[in-house]
Length: 248
Length: 201
Image (cartoon, rainbow over all chains, first blue to last red):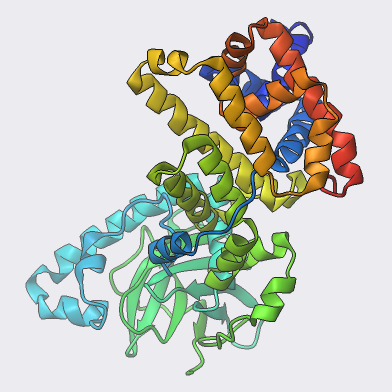
């Protein structure tokens, strides 16, 4: 049925729809229509504003706020990204990644290898998710979060090419503007600087714009290097850009 | 924006009480609990009152009200200030959620229980709810200005959570008539409520 044929039938239902007084099939039909009909969308909005005045008032129950407050968490809600590599989560926060891994020296190489691969998959999924607003918004919101530490990454005395926001629970976002595009056989890689050591915080691909990552341990700063292939366990390359958190 | 941990000054209660609803939501997006508390202060009564109107005095209404504010906390970006007020956004969420609860409860109990409630009793309850409206004489006046048939259709649908089909059955009218009365009733309410400053940007 064409848009025009359907329209009067939809219009009849708009009042009832605004009051949730329709059934599930009708709801779907109307919502599909509203997506491309601004006139009907506007009518529904007006009906809802009117309906909102009809609410019975009443005292705001205090006990209810207590229940809401108890359910609030300080950390931001989780993103629909690939799950964090279990190793990073299970480790107690006070132990930097590298120190923990050297304590299990024999497994270290294998573990790091797995970690890099998971980060690749994470990056793939993230790049798909990047098409959606929610990841960008989460990064921007993280930047505005007063408990986040932020730092700009730059080369020598040039303009900042990237910005990192790090939240207290170890989740972080990298927003990059000014990194030149890499050749296809190379990648950028991000490093968390902990106790003078570089710890991989993920590979970034050839021209990163936005990345989400996780770190544990007290981070002094971040650096980005250029690497061959799909990233390395330990980098010998000087950083392309670097930034250090100012001490509090 | 370079630099280490920022100082969290918090917001004074005076600052918060002066913020517009839209700015409150921005503050909520920055995880300011005080901003959510202020949103609750402003709209919690309406949210809870509406849920109670539809679901009665049990835990159901409290659950819905809690869900609405937690959702505001977790997904503040869903509120679009260009599409309406925060209040109508929260109340639309409350209403939708409450009706879902009502409908699934009815489905579980079986339709028979609802049918058994005499039409007259349902209408009486709704009239009482109309009298309870605390948004003042202006709303009552606007409602009183509607033809009775339109007023009944709107309040039976909105305040008692009936679908238009159920309203048609309750009033012994055709479904088409009820649909049309709900729509024209809502339109007719717009002018007096706009003049009273209760709707419209």
